Length: 381
Image 1: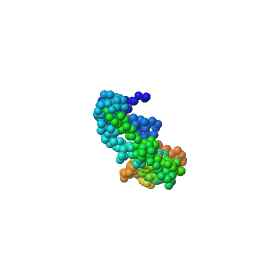
Image 2 (image 1 turned 180 degrees about the horizontal axis):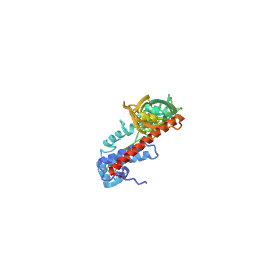
Image 3 (image 1 turned 90 degrees about the vertical axis):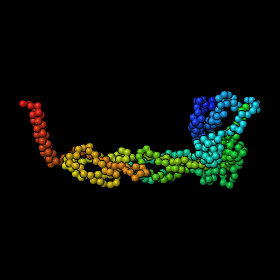
């Protein structure tokens, strides 16, 4: 016979843990191992073990007896000997039911969660690549996804049309299996979901030929995805209810579209701002000019002041990326890059040599004047 694990160890709490700590530990573990959530092998047995531990540690009187006598307090040995101090405390306590309903948002607790069709289908993930402009402006995309859908023949109940389901003999149509456990301190009732009918209370006598009784079939679904303006690379767009349908009916999961944004040939993005590097020639930078700048909304013009240096940045307000689900918008930052010509005509070379000579003479005069000032300051001869 297997040795039963310590209830405190099962819930992962210390023996001195207070009521709230025990309740919090149960909630966390129940979420993790509930069969509707965790499909791993052994999860259902782990969930039963967690329920059993909380049934005792969640009740002050039961916990007191467990602390004194351990598992022997709830074994069948010595049943019937002496009065029953726990009479009237059989089954799950009211606090357990309240917690269970909070965790899984059902109106009738664990026993009826499956019968009322509150199972939730799996979520799906789809990777979608869009252009830089589509990410900024927003767009609609039609995609095709393979998924489980409600069987159109049996409409999700798994039975062949025209046939009837039968009451489950294992649970007598209740969807629950109740096991009574006797101890020297009273009678306890463990309530579990029926394994045969999966909590539905009825079993299929003639499975649907199309879905083989699953209530769902594999299909390729065409879905329209609305991409909001301003999304960025790596963002997930949720499409509610477009995931998979669970077996035998229930709530479908969601579809998550993971976006990948292609880089732009000219623009870069920095948060909600767009960065653009504007190449201009030396003359426009030195003399000043009005130049054309591309934006995602069309052409704009900016004035370049005389003497502008390479690397100076100008801001175009409201020409950047929209904030998702907002009327706000970033700016376009235009950075000047002075371009050196690589091929010149003879006339251009002549003018540039003349310009260079004038610059050299000015620099020499400036350097000579500077030297005179230094010499005067230090009284050099």
